[in-house]
Image: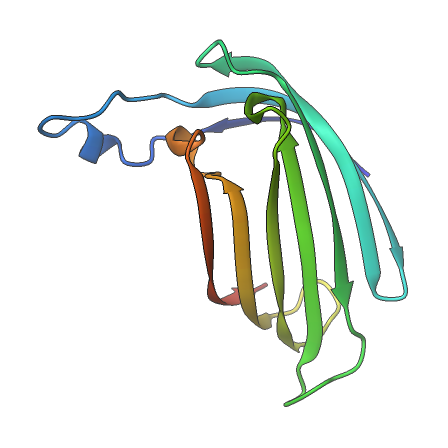
Length: 152
């Protein structure tokens, strides 16, 4: 279970926006209370919860959201000593009339499965929903591709 108070702000693209003929700049910044619970069983993990904005800029952001998902991590190698891993993550914001933003990843993880060790992950990724990147939060986006990551 995770309960936290956190701050998030984004200044993504500020330099571009402040150049010649900039569009309206939105300074997205907020503090939120979040509560997420998760349960694990035989390589599967399910989680869910939500958050509530307690201070937000712009000040007309709607404060509530729900967040849930499902993950799988195989314990035995599948191919090339890589274990199957994947998941689906969904978030629904009151700000977007509770539309569901969906992210899915599936692929292979190489390295030791226990925490604290280096891992290399190769994923196929897909996303459909509102842009999670700062001031562009009102834009709907879709993308797919490959992701390579190194975890510690």
